[in-house]
Image: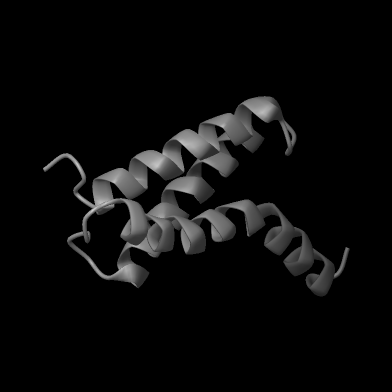
Amino acid sequence: MGPLDSLTHLAGFLAPAAFLALVLPAASRLLLRRGAGGYWLQAALVFIAAAAVLAGGLWWFGRDGKMATYAALALAAATAQWLAARAWK
């Protein structure tokens, strides 16, 4: 596998995390109060949490695409966004 193929696989692996990182902060501005940080800070926090869950699921199950990993991804991304938006206040 060449470097371009590796980059394509990595982009496909991180695509769910990137999608949630872009959508959740925008949706949170409609549903919750304005967060402590700006849009890009919240997106970065959600992306880091989501990417960590995807990597953990790959390590734990030995393969990508398990539904348990995606369930944990949704939970981790929502929790990260809730914390980034300081919604508990």
